[in-house]
Length: 326
Ligand code: AHZ
Image 1 (cartoon, rainbow, N blue to C red):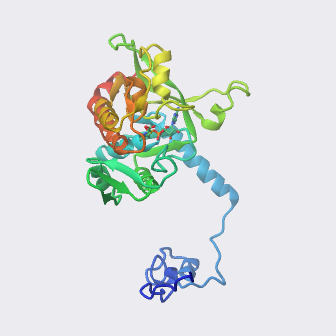
Image 2 (tube, rainbow, N blue to C red):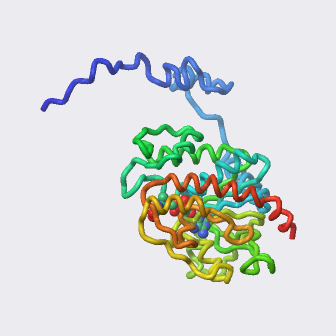
Image 3 (tube, rainbow, N blue to C red):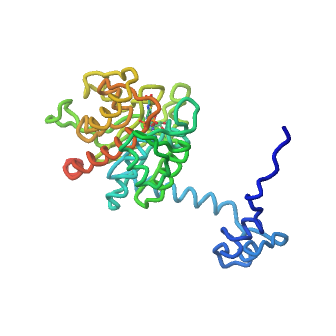
């Protein structure tokens, strides 16, 4: 069959997009240099960037990063893992409490966890109602399918949520950074005799070489509340749950059970809670704590577990902050 002609109702743009309106041309790029005016007018022949010395770039990046390390060494809330649950937690907390300093520690270079694809290697992301309320809150479009809604691509959800989270001035994402351990304080009143008082971190590339390099000590972040959302067990997953077991603060791992969407999603949201003083657990990491079912490729519970984790964090924040002065 011959290729069909371009449909007549798809009009050719009269001008190239960058000249026609967005963001240059009639709207103009902002900036007051001659070069900016040339770009706005589409004059590329004499175009040149503003001059730079390489050290300016190196110093700017280093200064900003080390300022952040200094600023967030004492955080109000640390979220471990920037998957769909951790990012939903961060969004809810940062919006509710702009006065709190929130650090997100993500082991991978790329935040988002398992939420870049909807399931298997498919694109669409499914959320069962009422999780559509969270999509509406963050401005992600979806299609109605009765009891559930569909986002056309999981990456649309993840990139939108990520951009909103990173736009909050009270949030810092430390990616390519692994939580290697938890900071603890003795607390005889707590079931396991400890309270969690921060995280022990290392750059992930360093953490990956503990077996073949000499000792490379980690760094630390103190915080009265840690929200752990590191996903179900795997090379990195269920980090805090496993560490709490090995230090005797949890009896044993419940072990994630087989797939049952109906049971799993309700359980994860309802049971998102503080499992040890100072440590709130949400998302699929919780399935390892409680022995909850997995849900597979339906993400509503991750978003709403994030909302619940934020609520649980704020409910105990003042108390834990008072306890965390030492
Ligand atoms: O890289 C991990 C991922 O981005 C990160 N992470 C894990 N251990 C870490 C550590 N330090 C720092 N020690 C760490 N970061 O945590 C993130 C977890 O994201 P995820 O998408 O795996 O977990 P989630 O609970 O947000 O979402 C789970 C999604 C799943 S799995 C599943 C099933 O198998 O049934 N169903 C759903 C919806």
